[in-house]
Image (cartoon, rainbow over all chains, first blue to last red; front, side, top):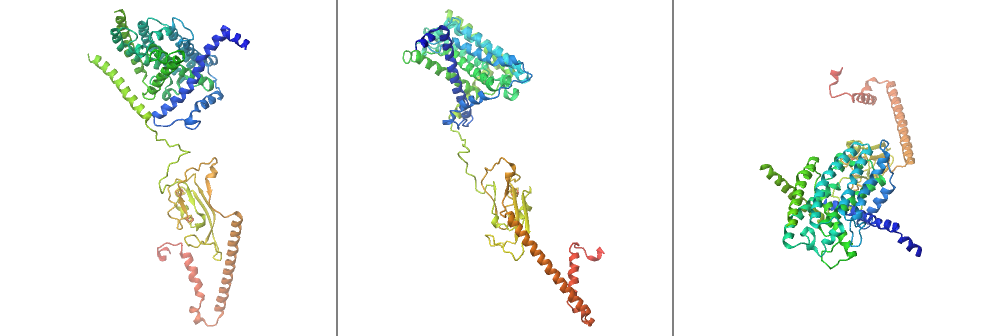
Length: 347
Length: 224
Ligand code: SF4
Ligand code: SF4
């Protein structure tokens, strides 16, 4: 027991254990979301989805996972082996590294750095490198097309996304995600989507711009996680499966996990920026570290749900439409919002 | 200015149509599904549905009408005329069976469920049932052998038929010998005037009709 305690007090061990907490969360979350997405997709299409394993097929995600784990891991002969193997891990790493600055609760945040959201944007950009790498290494035209599209898409959507983040940073005056959350503490009326914790006039003036920024960020984040209607990199009807066409078994599972992790990450950013992170909507009621993580996950899951809902509603955009939305609609609107917010904050 | 309005119009249309779409999908999501959990729940088939063929071999009289009606030739029948002395029993409709059906196979894999074999059957022994789950791992299992005669039975039947045939030929030979003897006796008779009424000319007309059968309707004079 004593040795265990001394081991646990060792800073390296604690760091590793703390770093693993989001991973455990992500694995459970991925299984739940996998099930939820299949069920939602099915019910939207008036089907039933999994019904056989367990009650209403609840054990199916576990069966799927076991299948992926024991599947043969095929590496194409003509592939660039090193990059091929590295790519999925890089993709997941980029996403997972971003979780370091996500405040799950008032007491749990991997790294409470002042550059929080800036670091998050930088680290999640690593995903593009991974995707390009996988497309290139697969030595397959579909994969390469998928990867190129994905790079073009993510790079162009990062601009309105980052501009939206900039608007929020201008309002809150901090890039530290924990501080961002604390500034919105005190109840639903203090959340940034409702104008934030400001005097009434400023609050009302901020409200429409916050809503616009929220929509802009939501759309660009959806594009960044490569999900319908922005799933051109994976466009099944044209590109088989895009950049992960050649992947199978465990590597494919990691791509999948990274996609879901990314989905939660952008939802978490939305929650932290506009919906008060882990703060309770009822002020003091039901607040505290444990409730905090509950609220955080609940809000995050709501945006995951929204994402899935949109995915099964809208058809895929064309490449030119995709670029149009990013450069001609989202970016000018984000710039406009930033200018307006600048005036409001100065006044 | 028009470009300006189209720009905002486009945005408005995109947002509103997305909203409409989302409203529709969420409505669909909460509305009950109509999926039938197939292996557990089965749909009630309508009456007179045409699926797997059922054949009641006991009623078959071996007329081969079904095999002739089938457009894809999936009914394979082999028959053998039974000697009249043999009693094969009766069908449930009261018809006497006169023919051994030594083989009655239906290749259900070829069957197109047209039901054309059902109607010509005089004893109504073919029927289309509502069974539709009969997949097999081996294609040969889809050839249904409805015939109930065992190889031994077939052999004995063949023997019987052979015996009967032999008896018949023996009888015929005997009859022919008798006839020949009678003819010879008649020819040897010293009264030629009585010959035309004698029974001997009976054989020649019979011999004449036999070759006449294949000839068509045309008068024999033109043929010659
Ligand atoms: S149902 Fe049609 S295809 Fe099938 S055996 Fe009868 S006649 Fe032939
Ligand atoms: S038509 Fe009926 S009786 Fe005739 S061979 Fe076919 S099944 Fe038998």
